Length: 294
Image (tube, rainbow, N blue to C red; front, side):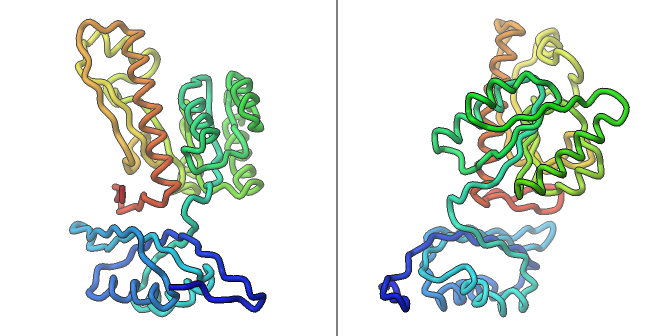
């Protein structure tokens, strides 16, 4: 289908959009949505759908190309949205998601995220890194990212840090917050404010090996597998909806230092994948779990 000619005589550009939606499962949803897309001259290039038997909710993700504007697509979808009570989101494929990174002293996760952004492999933009230690400042400077250090120890310090997080979200129009080994408990109030848009990463030893030196604890117990979990942050510590996990087999020959290196590599890959899927609108919440449209 050829592009329509605008009043200026210039063909309207073709844009690729991603559309995600959630609603109660009913007959006719896919037919109605795809029909609205056809109305605006859209061509569906990717489609994934899922009906959750436990919640009886219907989830769908579409990618489509069209010369129509986002406003025209929204207008075509409006009757369908009202008819089925759809919660939906429309975005441009590949648009970098504005992401606030929170860190502490560990460098591996922050380093990987920034490298992937520079390499063009991760569709996010990082306007600011906030940390409760100054360790990450040289890394942030190397990548040209503004850095702020605010301590979280002392009376009122953690509350002040979280207030700065809120302010930064407003200042930079942040869409996603990533706890890249930010080793602090997030308050229930901030968890609620960031529901569904704050991702944490941690090693797989929780809740068995808590506190300092979990890899030494794991070595002492002779663990046979190491991994990492990326999940949405909730007020239930480290129990939010899981986005991605990774597991590596190990044996008795590994030293605590080797176990740590293996574990950190798993954390890097797992966090990167979770952030990538979120930025690509492939993660939808289904109560206490996630639907991932790979």
